[in-house]
Length: 246
Image 1: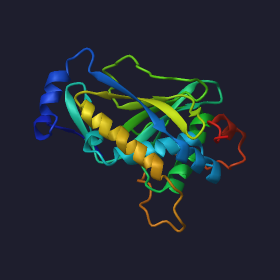
Image 2: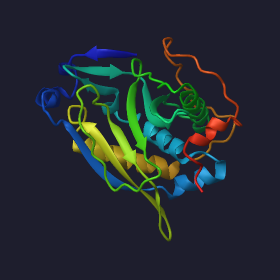
Image 3: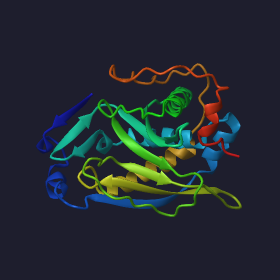
């Protein structure tokens, strides 16, 4: 559920008033994460690395109230549900966003991730649930090395987001430079650094739970969301998603 709220009823009232008309309200903080454990999980269980990153991001964000309240032009918006968005290369060569709802079970999140990204690939249309979820953007440019990334600000899109490129292998660990971009009305630099600390912790403890899992299931998609078919694992479009870690 997404609804407009009065900034005076939140802890972000002063920040919202100060930053809502600023031409440059977005802040970017870059950090190098240790993704050695995540790479090991990807190889062991054949999970896609970017899926695991999205899962860890959504779990870390769910622990902070700042991600449930976000600015939208002249107001603050509250949502009681989170989702993470990734970029999918479609069959016609274009790029489309795909929103995946937060799910605490890694297996269920992986199932949603694979099904929704394949749907976007085949239909060449974005899957957008931002009318019902607070969405965190991710842009994985896995074919390129990126140290830091700062995008242009648009008043039409003030969602928080993370950008990363290739992970980097060293002698004893694998690292991933990540840039986290956020609206100053939504959170301060300290909150952003706390989130990146939580993200590193989620990466370090990521694991495949024993079955059957007793963790919560994925929240249902909004009724207005388009239906999508179940695509078998042998579908050739699956190869267009980022590869499993080698």
